[in-house]
Amino acid sequence: MLNVQICVGSSCHLKGSREIVELMQNEVEKCGLENEIELSGSFCTGRCNRVGVTITVNDKVFTGITVENFREFWNENILKALDAKGADQR
Image (cartoon, rainbow, N blue to C red; front, top):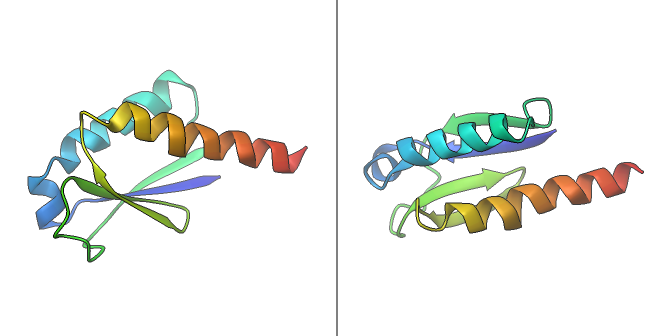
């Protein structure tokens, strides 16, 4: 299971975390990954001085996630992590 936490603290909320949550939920559903990705919110991750929203995937923290770069983030950090996880289990 891939644990994805999206910061919904005050700063990230103002920077678009609501939209990022919606994009993430839509992609998880569209790709049928409900049993492989656990989505949750988190409060401040202490990276408020950066552009965009902070997302933690398992223990790796990503900053600067915006609506504009979400697709790249999804492909590079979510789908690839799931592919790697699947390869490890084979």
